[in-house]
Length: 474
Image 1 (tube, rainbow, N blue to C red):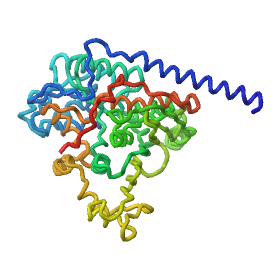
Image 2: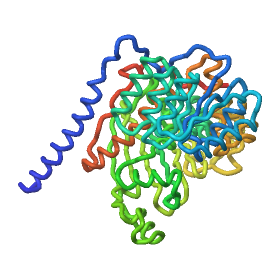
Image 3: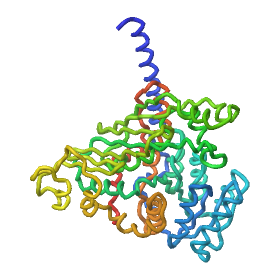
Image 4: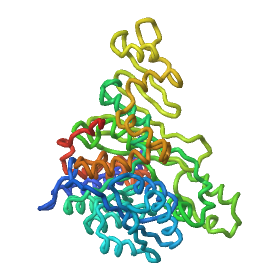
């Protein structure tokens, strides 16, 4: 190595080490749980016969939630809050269509960014849904928990590591749930793979791949809702800004943050930033606000996570490139693999080691399954029949009726209410939402340090080792 190259190399390593130290310090500074606080991993709140709900945000995403929550029995929508009066009124009409008698007393709070605080103080709801732009998620969740409410928050749960710790501390002190609304965990195929993982069908799990590949450049034409604020994130931040839809399910397959393993380190790289600027130039006047932005965020980000037990997860994010939608949804074990988009399975089993119908569907040679080729399409019918998740089978009819990304949204919302009423832990605990969301800011820091390997802070403070695996809910 030449002297100049060596000096450059040492300079890079020193900078990377400083970044790692900063993250490590962030972890150690919060290693002690404050006195009087409660670990929330397996937390069960007192049962609620009826769940009184307030919703902050009545925009496009809110419609799914307020319709579902108004439909589910033993709920009462007590408050709706939005900056815009017309959106709140439209949401109220939808709620009353579901059950005008049960939700007759719903109140509206509008016209001010902090009107939600008045709603929480006056109505004292049991549960608050936060359905607002990303930068409001953590502050509103904190205010809701401080106001005595359990909280469900749209993805991501927060934007910074500091906010992760704030949410952890407030939830543990107030003993209020804070769950991120990761709906993809409730998709049929994601629940299928979860059930197969719990039954050991894929063997020992070693690797997963997750993604959110969704071309959304057309949101830049939106002047009033999502595109009006997300575009600034794409312009000013460079990392994996939206990791949880792909990561949430595979993290639960691998039982991360619960007994078996946890998030260890992350390294991240982004491609050059091209697509958003090209789209703005092609579709908007030269003096348009989008053409005045410098788009810093790479079109595609790839992050690699290493778990504490040495397993790996690749996480990709791309809302810019012209390519088909995918969440990857790949899980690899010692006995085979499952993958999504399209759903495919390949297993390594001898005759007699699988249910006969499943073996026949996957068979290659007479006495062995074919793990050199994917089985997909109609041939997977026997796999679904054998391994469909019992929660999906129980809620399938209502989920199809109520909709929401094929019904996954409904199953998620119904399970939140069911767990609160029956006195069960939530399916996604606070810390899972924190780890999945932390990929955002950690990936940004890693990209900025040319792929430096950064440690995840342990938001559980070591308690993940004693947290029960997610149960297969029947």
